Image (tube, rainbow, N blue to C red):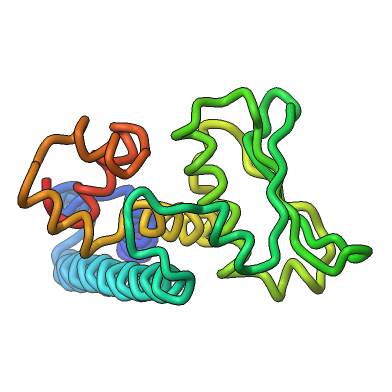
Length: 219
């Protein structure tokens, strides 16, 4: 019972090695050997799982970087600041700026009558915020366009969004990569490692620039 409990706790990340060893004292000598073995085994498995998850996320990030670069190259947009409206136009996507419900920053939907995608952006937000929202919605289009086409659903994004699932993580990452191309940012950072200057150059917020630099390992 004890070693099964320890095993389960390890996999839910609710127990440390020390806590596992503390439970050893609660069982007899024979069970103690079993529990020590299981504790060490679960600890090793947990570490291995975390490593694999990290490797998988790194592969995903590299894939998204390539995806962003392909989009920028295809749309002749390897320059700063990137013109998101031109990318939308090149892909036959209509973009509208209007007043949206209080907690909504943007939305994307396939219009079956017009046979094209449409993006809505909250018009009262700062430009850098609008740009990130537009990049985020475009990311959903490039990553999930066919799915949206089939489902005919409106995808909403709330203000001060948090990554609730893998789709949102991918869209957020691709949005940042579209706005701040890895190669261009890396070169400019070597010339001028000033976050405020880089943020103005790429027309993004300083917080978005800071996060991007951290993501790329430049900070």
